[in-house]
Structure formats: structure tokens, C-alpha cells
Amino acid sequence: MQYTTEVLEKTRNARLETRVSSDQKNLFQRAAALSGRTLSEFVIDSTQEAAARIIKEHEIIRLTREEQEAFVTALLSPAAPGSRLHQAAKNYRMKTGL
Image (cartoon, rainbow, N blue to C red; front, side, top):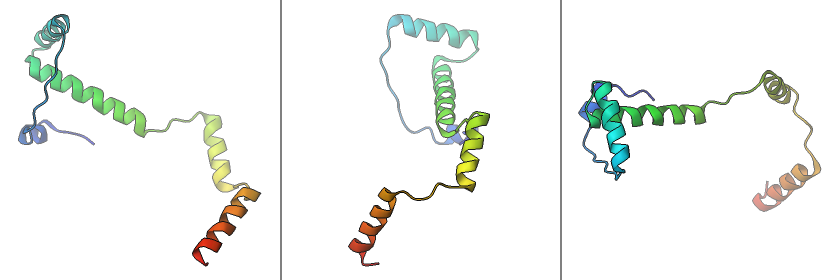
């Protein structure tokens, strides 16, 4: 999900507070000044970028070539159901009356 500045500006109605050490605050203030942003802008932008990156990393599945081939093979030629699956289906049919 992409967040535009316009959307964020229109919906800024929540407050987020945190405690940091003096060293951390000084570091953040220095980085903000070097990037030409206020401390709040820097913290918000940095946090948003980190959150988007982490979410993206968890939503994308990366497979090696070998893993891709195994996945496609499993889809195209699935293994025959085992005895446990047959038993589970039988139990399901008995419980549901199907």
C-alpha cells in the first residue's frame, strides 16, 4: 500500500509519543537537520519507510530456482493422498453426514 503525502496530510489526527535517550534524540535531530527536515518530519518519514520495507519483505515470497521448480512440480503433479488424509476425510464425512 502506497501512502502519498497528500493522503497523510489529510488524515493526521492521531498522536504517537515515545521516550528516547538524549543521545538518540541528538542523533535524530542531527540527521533531520542534515536532511533539511524537522525532527517530526524526519521521524515520521523514517518510520514510514522502515514500516513499508518490513511489510514488503514479509508479503513477498522469494524462492531459489530450485524451489520454484519444486513448487511448480508439486502444483502440476501433486502427490497421492496418504492414509492420514484418507482417514481425516472419512472422519469429516462421518461427522458431517456427507
